[in-house]
Image 1 (tube, rainbow, N blue to C red):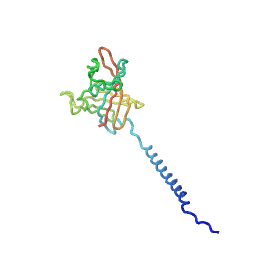
Image 2 (cartoon, rainbow, N blue to C red):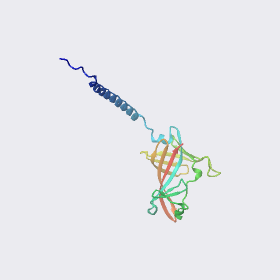
Image 3 (cartoon, rainbow, N blue to C red):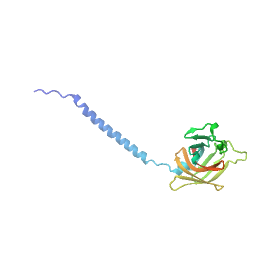
Length: 203
């Protein structure tokens, strides 16, 4: 009896399936090795992110205050940009801003190019930028020490005049540092509290 010759097409799916499984295993192994290498890469500590290996320069590029008093709880003041005021996320036209906000201090334009240099020895200094705020301005405006809390969530600056500023760090990367602290100003004889969010950009 004559038997039909085997059809080679019957064998192709099994061969392709074998190759597919092998390719998948090789790909999976490669991804696993890459993932392990990526996980093993050391992450920069928060102190290094702030001060680098020796020193690192930053510039303030944002300062916004969220008011805490019940009467103005929906207000946000952009101190960095001419005290623009926002309510529920919408900018209030200047003609509609209450008179009592006219005397709120703003972020000086001449200070926007100042550079803050953090050093790895836990000192810092604020240097005058190209636009001095007065003819008597010195190059080094302030200097002092800085320290991170044990949980690395709070950055404390102590300047040479005895002023202490604490920032609760809400964001910290190679290029950006953001911190919050509280402040207040007086509106028509009433103290108004706010949470100030300051943004620093690496230079």
